[in-house]
Structures are given as structure tokens and as C-alpha cells.
Length: 543
Image (cartoon, helix red, strand yellow):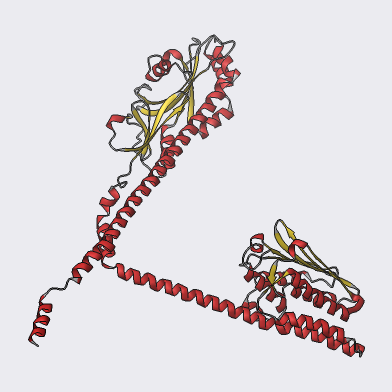
């Protein structure tokens, strides 16, 4: 007994080893994978954010480039309307004897309403400089001597280009006008066969309008357009037209995207500033969230696992309930359609027996037996087109016995459609509808045509009768019931059989079956069913 007590005491005195082992297991199997997963997640998040940022930068730069090019293209159109204008050239080439002679020619040459409208809608003005000594300065026509020595003209000559684009801070307009920013499009008016004088066309684009357009197209990104050494226009504002352009080395901010463009021989660079919250800044800014995420992952992994398991079980139960509901609906359809055909067939026998008083009903009963035998077999809701056509033929034979010469019918099924599977008693339902509502109410002979064929791989079923036809308003009601067939619809009175068939076709094709109905009063009715080819080759409808 003492030995036993000592053994128990020794076991109590030793610390349990499993908590430590469980902690190591918890650390290696849960904490480390979670931390690694979070690290990978944040790395992917940062990389994804970077890709999105680069796309946004590139899109903003592309929008700026397109808008800048569009403005310059409009300026080019204005210049072209001037440089290609023979009247302007003749006006600038003529030697004038005095001021009156010049002003008369000036008014004739500049009275171009289209050119004025073009300048107005594009917020631009034009100036022409020529070395014709007889012109009078003013009204957009100036002596070339007046331009020599000015910065814009010297830059243009130094470029050696026929066409030149330049952002210009104008200090030379005179003591009255305050210096301001301008965007210039300069083009030489050459290639004129009778030209004696040099002529230069300068388009002055309104800088304020242009800078506002740049701010609107950048999509919220902050950037600028620069020439060789100056930032010429910013997308985030700071475009005071009375301040000189900013030198690029004075700009503070890291450029996240940069691309070079050339417009009419003049190079420009479009730069987009990198956002302050991009890259690792996202982690630094949200480090409390990162720590909370780690804590939650470390403390509640078992809770999340159980929650996931509960959700999955709930989904499975929901799926089981949905399947049970569909099965119940199908059984309800089966129980509803069985008496439907039986009662109509028995009514045909009764009417024929009353009218004829003969034993010829034996053949009708035989046909009825065929129908009821197929009708009672619901081991499978699907049957082949070929079997369904046997049923249709038996039904129409029974009806022909009733109507005699008033009913003729024809069944035409393409060979490659006979093995296609469809829900039972669907085609015969439409055929029965054609008999009861088409042929029965017509005193003259009528036909029923049943056709099954393929069109573009789709399975097409047509039931046509030459019966009474259906009024237009009733056609719309029937079309709506066919397209919106449902269990609730079956609870209503009316053509239950057609709705039943349409609903089972919709269930078999996941709602992708298409119905058509055409009818003309006194001519007949045609009902079409189109089963898409993907449902002819899959699930229960296969060939």
C-alpha cells in the first residue's frame, strides 16, 4: 500500500508534459502557417496595389498625352487654314501704297467667319509675322522685324523646324500687359510659288483653358508635362498664368511613371507623381490592423474552423431541402397529369358510344390501354422522342376514331432526333391541346402536324394544327403562361396540361428552353419548342 501511495505522489509531483507539446504543435501548425499566410497576403496585396497604381499612372499619362495632342492638332488645323489660304498669301505678298490701301485688303483677307469660329471654339488666336515692309502692324498682322530678338522667335529659328511647339512665358508684350504663360504653335508659311517675303504663323493657345483641361483628364493623379528643363503644366493645379514656369530640378516629389512624347518635332515628357500611400506605406499606415489580424488568427482559428464547418453543414442541409422540394414538385406534376389524359380519353369513349351505340369501342379501348400503360410508368420522368411519338400516334389514332374524317395527322421525326431524351408526356400534351382547342371546335376537316428536327444543333419540336385558331389577346395570355410556367401557375384554372409540360421542360433545361406560339383566327395554330444544343448533349436530355 505504501508503495502505491508513493507512486501516486510521484506522479502528482511531476509536471504534465502535454501542455508544452500542445503549445509547440499549436505554434508550428497554426501560428506559423497563419503568419506566413498573412505575410504572403500582404505581399500580394502590395504587389496588386502596385500593379493597379501603375495602370492608373499609365492611364492618366495616356489621357494627358491624348488631350495635349488633341489641343495641338486643333491649333495645327487653324494654322493650316491660314497657310493654305491663297487670299492670305496674296494679301501678305502685295506691296501697299498707303494705309487705306492696306486696311481695305486686310478687311477682305481676314473676314473669314469659319476661321474666326475655329479660333473661338478652340480658345486660340493667330498672329502672322512677315518681312513685307509695306504692312502696318496690328490686328494679328505684324512685321517680322518685331519678332526678331524675342525669345520665342529665337527658339523657333534655333530649332530648324518648319513647325514648332513651345510653352512660353511672355515678357515682351509691353509695359501695360502683365507677363503670362502661353502655349504656342508656330508654323512657317512656305511653299508658295509667288512668295517674295518670309511669313510665319503663330497660334497662341489660351493657357488657362488648356491647364484646366489637363486637370480634368488626369483622373485624380498628380503629374505634369515638361519640356527640356521646365514643368509646363501640372494636373493638380499650381498653374498660375502670371508665374514663370517651374524648373524641373525645383520640383519635390518622387515620379512613379514617366513617358516621352514628341509633338510636331518637339519633345515633351509626361511625369506622374507616386502616391504617398503606395507600396510599403500601406503597411506602415495600417500597422494596427496588421497586428489585430495576427491576434485574431492566433486566438480564434478553432472558432473559425467550427464556424466554417457549421456553414458547410447548413449549405448541405439547404441543398437536401431543395432536392426534396424539387422531388415533391415533380411528384405533384405526375399526380396531376395522370388523370388529365385518362379523363379526356374516357370522355372520348363515352361520347362515341353514346353517338354510335356500337361495339367498335374495343379498338378505342385498346388504344387507351397503350396510353394508360405508358402514362402509368413513372420510373423515369424522361423518355426518348421515338417512344413519345408512339404515344402521340396512339393518342391521335384514338382521336381520329372519334372525329373520323374531320381529323387527319402527320408525324415527321428526323432520324438523328429519335434517341433524344425529353420529359414524358410533353409533346402529347401540346398535341392534345391542338385536338381539344383546335380541331374539336371546327366543323370542317382539319390537320395536325408533329415535326421534330435539328436546327443549328438545337432540338426543335413543332405542333401545328389547322383548327379554329386563337384570338390575339388569348395568344398573349397563353405565351405568358408558357414562358412563366411555375407550380403556383398550376394551381390556377385553365390550360393546366400545357403549363405542366412547359414547367417540366424548363426544369429539364434549367430554364433555357424557348417557346413560340403563332395563331391566326380561322387558320390554325403552331406551337414551337426549342431545346438548346448544350442541353441536348448533357444531363437527362442527350442524343
